[in-house]
View 1 (spheres, rainbow, N blue to C red):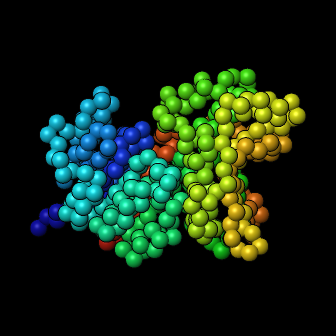
View 2 (view 1 turned 180 degrees about the vertical axis):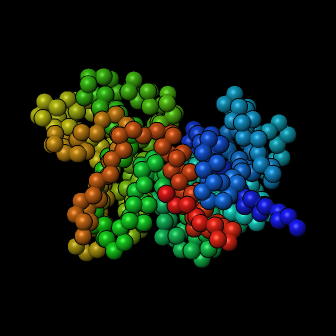
View 3 (view 1 turned 90 degrees about the horizontal axis):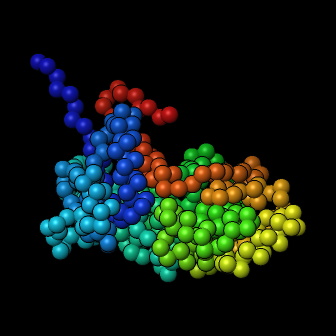
Length: 366
């Protein structure tokens, strides 16, 4: 009797949020999804998409992603005959009934700086539905990391967010996978691409508004850029980093914060004249009483400082550790593709953790 080949394991994905990052991720998934199939033994399909602006679509056998991308980018709704009940919570609930393979909710909604909602509620609902969660939203880790981590463990699912802080640079993977037994005592970094691009432009004598507009044009800064220039985006990243790497249990509201504005041009030029550079620095440190102090604000740095030499959309983070001293990770180019790649990497991590392979088949782990 001829043996039938094994049926593929599906990795079913629901996208909650379909903005710049979500759409770039959908395209990257089509471009590199074959890698997941070949190396991890899964077939990836997007079964649901939900966005406040363009509505919702669901298809258990897989959404027509090219059509969805075309409709959204033409300013149309995802479906002409959309059911009124089809909302983000409804799509997450529908994930309970899809294939017996891996089920993942990918959440890329806009950061809510007041409380991290509704992203936190979406993450919790996904756990309750037995879904793994991947997010590029800083809110869940910045406002509720410890509780969500514990809920994910109790549900037997993964909660991953590599794209939340430095696009595709593996800061959280670095600590989780390669620094066992190392304590992070503090960190400092440049973690917001928009403000770093603006400060670089101000150093070159450009005006504030055109430099900001360029970041909006490429989808790095939002139409309302206050989260970036007022320092809230960096504060959320500091809180997420401190919570995950230092068990800080703080929120962005606990971060001492100062942003930048048109008047920063004078400060940037004065710093240049003094042989220094002005950068928006995000930092955290553990105090003697065990608490963690965190801040975001413009700082004049010596010209030889690693952070001082970051220009344009470059980011970097310097970890201060007990055993290895200082560890620096730099990203010289950031953008939508890098953030989308981080989401893809988190999917690979979920496959490595949870996808069974046929008996005797080796799992390729590059």
